Length: 342
Length: 292
Image (cartoon, rainbow over all chains, first blue to last red; front, side, top):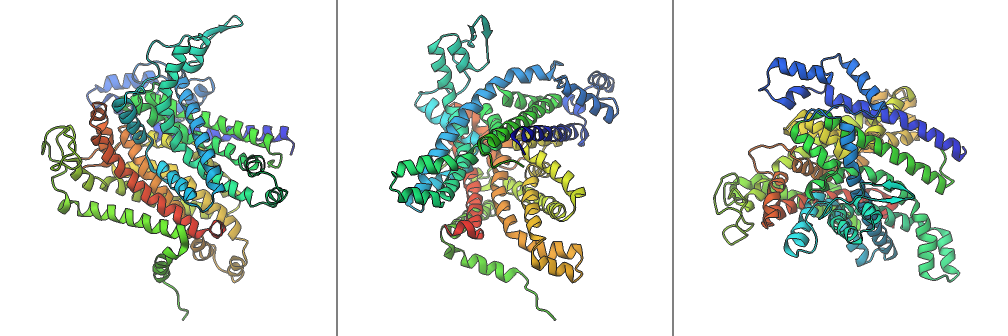
C-alpha cells in the first residue's frame, strides 16, 4: 500500500470512530436514567417552566429526532446551548482551548524529556542500582494522582518558598498578540502572544506560571515514556547491528544515540499520540488545581452547575480532538517508518 | 474418573514461590504486603483509630501535627490520623467493584469477539477501539456526572473506561490461541464452542488478565480519587481519602499542608501497592522480559 492510499484509508477510518464516539456521548447524556433538565434546575421549578425549558432546548422531541439534530448540529460545529447561560457551547469551549493546549504542550515537553533521558540511562545501566532507582521512580510517579503532585508543588514552591505563582496563567493583563505582515495574530497561547507583542517580561511571567502545572502533569505522563523508551532501547541494544557497531570500536555514545535511540524512539511517537488522551484527562485535574482557565475548568464548572449540554459539548470536543491527533500521529509514523503500511 | 486440579493448590504454590522470581517476584510480595496492611487497617479501624473519624471538633481547627494529633486536624477539627486509618473503605470498594465489572463484561466479550467471525468481531472491536481512544477520565466524568453519586455508579463510570483494555488483550490472545493444536484437538473431538472457550482458552488467558487487573486497580484508585477531587465522589458521611484531598484544598492554600499531604500519601500508597503487584506479575508471567 502506498503512503497516499494509507493516508486516505486511515483518514476514512476516523469517520466511524468519531461517529461512534459522539453517539456514545449522546447515549450517556440523553438516554441514561435521569432527566438532564430536571437534574439541572432541581425539584423547585414548576412543571410548566420545566416544559418550557425542555422545549426551548429541544429536549421534548422524540429521542431519534434529538439525535439527528445533535449530529447535524455537530456537523455545523454547533455543540448546543448551555443550560446555565443559554449561550452556545462551542465558542465557550473554543475560547478555553488555547489555555488547555498551552498546558498540554508544556507538559508533553517535560514528559518526553524526563521520560526519554531517564529511559536511556536506565537501559544503559540495565540491572544496576541506577536502573532499579529509575524504574521505582517511574512506578511512584505513576501512582501519584496528578492533582496531589500539583498541590504538593503549590505548598512547597508557592506557599513555602514563594518562588513561583500558585495558579493562574499570567500576573498582569492578557497578552494581546502582535501584527506580522500586516495581519494581527492572537493565538490565546500566552507565551506566543507575549512574544508577538514583543513584551519579554510578560513572556517570562507566562513561563513562570507554566512551570508548576506542566511539571506536575509532565512527570505523571513521563512514567509511560520512561517505560517504553527503556524496553525499546533494551530491545534495540540487543540487536546484532548494535553489537556489530560496538565490535567495530565505535564510541559508546555514538552507538547509544545514533544506533540505539534512533530506532528506539519511533514507538515513542506512537505513545505520544496515545498519551495525548491521558494528557487531556490529567489536564482537567491540573487545571482545577492551578486555577487554570481551560476546558478542564469549564467542565468542572459545568459539573457543579449540572449543565449537561456543556459537559456533553466539551466531552465531544475532547473526543474529536483525540481522534484527529491520533490520525496525525499515525500518518507521521507511516511517513517515518516505511515498514508500517497496513 | 479423571482427577481434576481445583486450581487452589497451584495458586498457593505460585505465591509461595514468588520470592524466587527475582525482582518481579519481590515486587509482587511487597505490593501484596502494602495492600494487605491497608486493607487490614481499614477493616480494623473501629478498634485502632484513636478518635471517632467523623466527630467534629475533637481538637482545635486546622492544628498542625502534634503529639496529641500526629497528623494534625482539618478545618472541622476532625483528627486526620483517625480519618486516614478509616478512610480507605470507599476507594477499595469502588476499585474492587469496577474491576469485577470490567472482568465480567470485558472478558466474555473479548472471548466472543476473538473466537467468532467478522460479523460479531468487527462491530464489537470498532466500538471498543472507539471507547479505548476516548480520554478515559473525560468519559468517566461524563458518566459519573449523569449517573450521580454512589459506590455503584462511580464503579460503573470507571469500569467503562477500562473494559476495552480487557477486551483487547483477551481478544488478541484468543486469536492466536484458537489455532493452536490443543484447541484444534478439542474441536476435532467434537467439543462445544462453550467448552473450547471457557475450559481450554479461558484458563490460558487468565495470567494476562491478572496482570491487567492489578494495573487496572491502581488506575481505578487514582481515577476514583480524581473524580472525587472534581466533586463527583461518593460523598457519604464516612471518611474518605479522596474527599479529604478535595476538602483540604482551601486549607492548603492557607498553609495547612497536612490536610492534603496525608490523604494524598494514602492514595499513593494504595495505588503504588497495586502497581507493584501488576508490574511484578507481568515480569514473572512474561518469560520474554523475564530473561533479560
